[in-house]
Image (cartoon, helix red, strand yellow):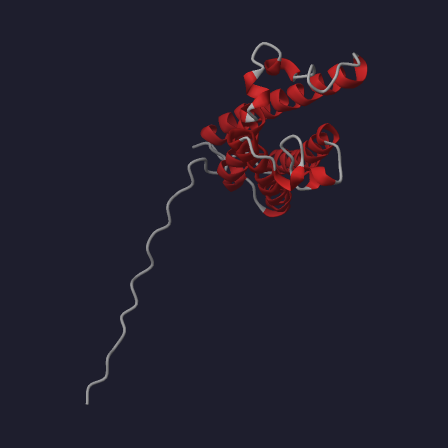
Length: 183
């Protein structure tokens, strides 16, 4: 009677993150991401100003890029693109955060996953010309109970707040660390 022995494969080395903590690439990545987030906010704030400051209709208020390129708004590509970039940025940059900062960054990521899903639903409806939930326009799930412009300002706020908290914690912790010794 023979007994089979199992061999356990040695630990395979894990792949280094694309943007490792403390690297120049991470710093550049964070700055690029911050600029994208600011641009995203610019779109939403411009649209909010058009609606509530200029009293434009929802169809007229298209934000910064939507005015010269209305197809970006009517097809949902602009907002979906921002949602994907935000999701990718939160995923790619997460390795640069540790401890409490990582938990805050993770919270922003979890909220953005849902936000992305809502934008995906809107994009599918716009591209298929089939609106869900019996609505006359593309509609997200939470949009069934909250107006779209206000809802997306809310989503962006609740993604941005934990992201900013994570960045502040990261910057403060890096300032407290002693400088590396020079030979």
